[in-house]
Each structure stands twice: as C-alpha cells, then as structure tokens.
Image (cartoon, rainbow, N blue to C red; front, side, top):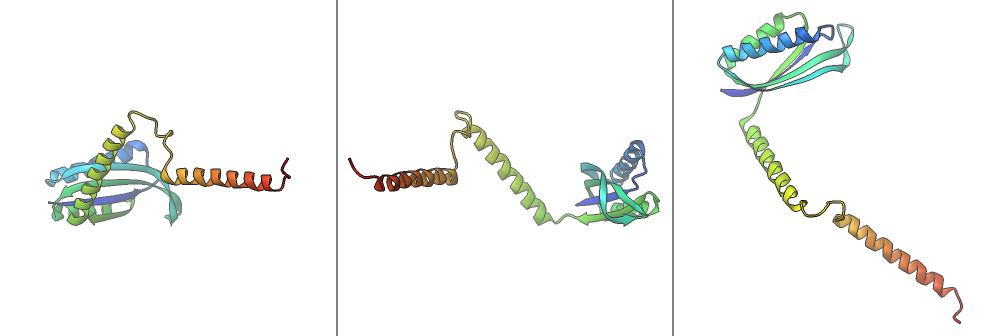
Length: 157
C-alpha cells in the first residue's frame, strides 16, 4: 500500500453536520477499500484565490491515508459525482520524502529534549545569543570611545 493525500474543496453553503458526514463517508470508503487513515486536517472555511461558482469562500479538508490505487480511483469517482464537491486533488507521497520527513521529525524531537535539559537550570532569557553578546560588546566599546573623545576636548586641571 502507498500513502496518499487528498485535499477536498466543498461548497461554503454546507452546514457543519454535512461536512462531517462527507468526511466520515470519505474515511469509510478508505477503510472499506482496505486502507488506513493516518491524519485528517479540517481547515474549515477559507477565502478562495478566485471565485468558483460565484463564491469567494470554500470549506477545505485534507486527509492523509494509506491505500491501494483502485480504492483511490473509486474515491475520486465518488468525489466527482457529488455536486457540493467543487475541487479535489490526490497526491501520492514519495517514499524518499516520507523517510526524510520522519527523520526531520525525530531530529526536532531530539532537539526539543536537549533544549529541555539545557534550559532546566537557568532561564534562557538570562543567556544572550552570540549575536546579542557581540552587539552589547560593540555598544559598550562605542560608549567608552565616545567618553574618551569627550575627555580629549576638556583642558586638564
């Protein structure tokens, strides 16, 4: 089985109950076809880049799932038959990209754990970053230099 993402654009005139029914019907089609739902993102009502059927808004949702290609074809056929489905797009996820995304997620998780350990003793606000430290040092040098220049203009007593 391969991993797919399908984004669907629905009419903004649909109620929340109808949208949830459409999403659950989509999920049931995938599971009946032997697939598995990985993630469902409900984006909600968004403004469109250009009008579709004289409407400026649409309801978006994105489903990530694993399935066989014949099940994906059936899902797309069902989407074409629904009048309230304005647009849809299915993308097959590349296995190399999936490995890279998993690796990046692991790295981010490890980095967060390390930051948690490092910052447990002190506040991160107390420690300025390298650039901030350099700026503070440069500012203090400028203040010292300007103080010396002001002293040069005064006569010695």
